Image (tube, rainbow, N blue to C red; front, side, top):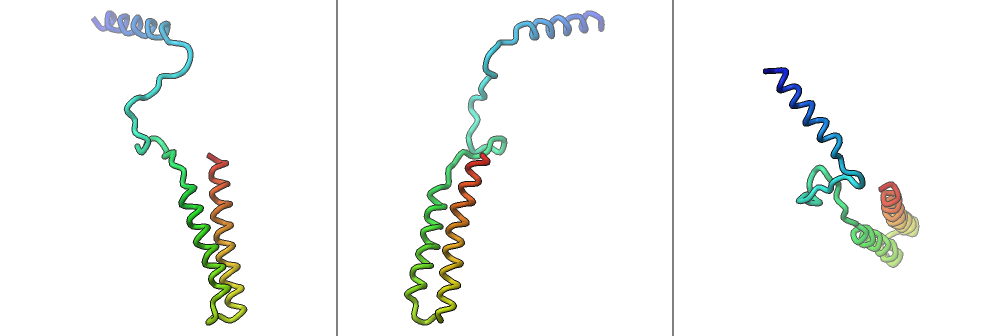
Length: 98
């Protein structure tokens, strides 16, 4: 009896192997883009641009601040502009690697 089952399995395997379709692999249907198996395809450019704009605004407003010493103004401006540039460069590198 076991020999008959093994022969049947081999026959089914041969049948499946011979009927493999050529071309593109099958597409999974019903999979949401937010599922843990598939990475999100959302582009976060808006958040990066807003963050960079806010840091740039801090830099320019700090130039007008009168309670800071000139050295503190320069430091705050440089840090804000560096943060904005880093945000944009990091986003660009992330998009290239994807």
